[in-house]
Length: 401
Picture (cartoon, rainbow, N blue to C red):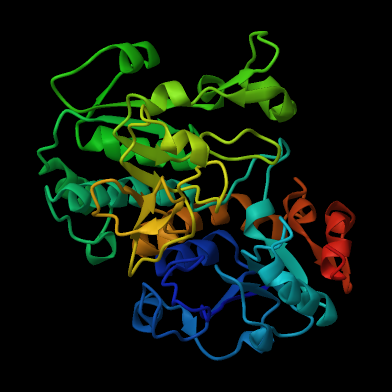
């Protein structure tokens, strides 16, 4: 089986890669029948020379490979017909901007495996960059806080080497006695928590957070069961919420009344209530002044997120009165950090973590006849058609929705 590590071609450039040089070496050691070829790239976090030094072939020979491994969407004109591809296609939610890409995948008889739907038997994702989004997102949020209030000017995350360097910068801060709220306990939320814990911030319970004042900065991590409640007043739980989101309403405002800085690291499911609305943000008791929206659902559950921001310009302001964008330094503005490709700012850490999971959960399936069904579940297209699992995308592909 011949695997090709493709060059990332999407703009803005993405330095991440599915397999680092050491990861490639590990694949070849574990699977004697595996062959790896790395397409040359001037932007990858690891130079071509670093691969060559470990004996990995670097060559423009992707057409000779069976399986092509990338991170972001492959431009349509760069897709090689009749190949197996792995990348984030951003089509499973019927994203309009990538309809043409999925149509091209089908037209070119490509077998597409989307990283986002690679799961185990329990339908849990097994490869993801979410932890690194949380790590960088939390750091960027503190950077936004410092700039908003003129307290400090942290260096940009992508100018630092790794997570340890980010934490070292955060440890230098002298913060006022603020309350920081973190939503989500998945990969993203827990990645953000690593940073809060790493900088030495005290963690408090929901009751303490809502009712007490502190002479130091503190944070509280909450999940869906704490910021939603059943409409009928019956005591709910997380499992019930995810099964019946329409039966719930937001219970977030009690947190908004005491929170200075909010980090959104939750997963938002269709049909779930918004955490806070634009009307909520207008309320005189709404205290949040800085939002790090790592989840970045545009014009959605975090109402202050009007658009995604960029690594180059990561912060904008939200004016609650006019419901429009403004200078984030304006005294009445809520500063919003909503970069939607945060792991790109720590490309080596992110690539190494992703590669470890890919080697553990995906590569073996090519050599054990896919005994756990990993490939079968993630296969979106086959023989020019959508697979049964993804047949719900047919009208989307046809332009009917």
